Amino acid sequence: MKLNCNQFWLCSLEHPAGAALNRHQTGGYNHGYNKPSGLPHGGKRQQEENVGTPEVISSGLALGAEVRGVALGSGVDAATIGFIKDALHQHSVLVLRNQRLTPPQQIDFCRRFGKLEAHSHPRYLVKGHPELLCISNIIGDDGEPLGLADAGTVWHTDGHFDDTPNLYSMLYALEIPHDAHGQALGDTLFASTAAGWDRLPETLQNKLLPLKAENSLAAINRELHRRNPALQRPPLSAAWANKVVVHPAVRTHPVTGRKAIYVASAASARLLGLPEQESRALIEQLQTLCTEPDQIYRHRWQVGDLLMWDNCTCLHRLSNDFALPQRRLLHRTTLDFAVPF
Image (tube, rainbow, N blue to C red; front, top):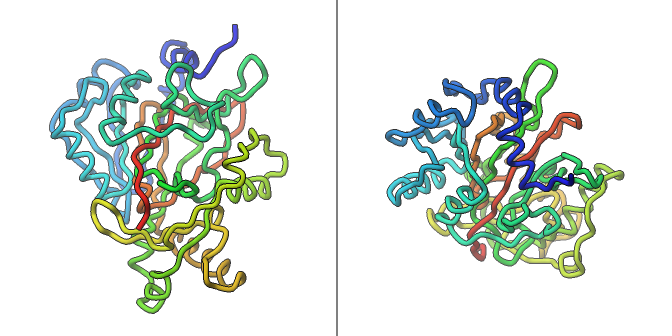
């Protein structure tokens, strides 16, 4: 029987192997968090413990926080959505642990934050749920990848290559790889481009403010293939292969008004108006500044995590430290759109 991504979602919740994965989850936060206690993910007691007065536990870094006291599968009222949005705009990255969501429940929650995107990789959509992109290294019975296996292995912000980039992204964990000691692999790293902007000297801020950058999905693909020549990815459509968009090098958040650096080494081919060598050097300098090790929030995944981030104010990338038979399966949504200014 050929399994699709939707059927793998059912297997991850029902198959005994899924329960074994849940028992191996380890403490998830590197910066002072404590692992929530309770039964394996999806257990009745843990779901009950999720319900209460919402609270935010900050990572203590420039970005990253946990929201507790919310069970998304039970439905979320408008006041709680507002609370989560405010926390997201303040912390840029949020995690809600111990969730148990069907694809329709995940979609319904995400829609509360804006219009969902039609993804640029239709081959990897969850069957029956085109709003969900399957992120996975699992190989199906037909010998083809179940999902997009190499998503996010370079520093990037979602939708950077589109005319109206995504404001938010959300990723729900169904299977997480582990090493022989039960340690979770495949962490996602985040770096604050808003904090990076704040750390720039005023002279460099003034230089950047009027600049614009060319960005493209083709540039990201070239960088991925440069790093891994054996990479097998579906070819881009002609429209995406030739599409180049111009965005400000400094973005203003449409809700908070906060400024953030809006270039990335892989997506941003050049800064217009500067000589090529100076342009490339400045792009690399800005990314290095934003991604200094002491500025990074590292998310260690647990099954049942719903992770969400604000693309206006951060970069992210996958820690690609796992391979089959270590399996990874997540469902992603990207949503809401705004022309950068």
